Image 1 (cartoon, helix red, strand yellow):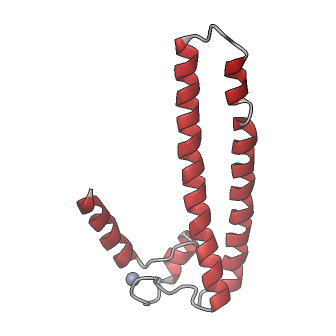
Image 2 (image 1 turned 90 degrees about the horizontal axis):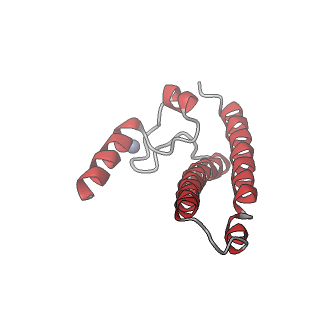
Length: 122
Ligand SMILES: [Zn+2]
């Protein structure tokens, strides 16, 4: 039997970790725009580096936000009593999958289908 209370605790811990990482990421990102003003002869390479860093940071931030949204959704399902059920078909997600990925909101079959549909749409 799935121990939902334990998975709930894992989700909450992971959420706190993600929030910490997001905060760190933002704190590190703050001084970037200011610094460029201070160098009137900004080198192109430096600017390219900064743009690259910014892009990397934004991509990472998006990844963290997506992961956070998934976890929050799973936590809401815990509270609503629907945790462990697939968002798409309503069938149980399966304990092995939940233990590997407590924030899973889709059963494996729907996940695979969604992934192939997304790929097809692009
Ligand atoms: Zn499903």
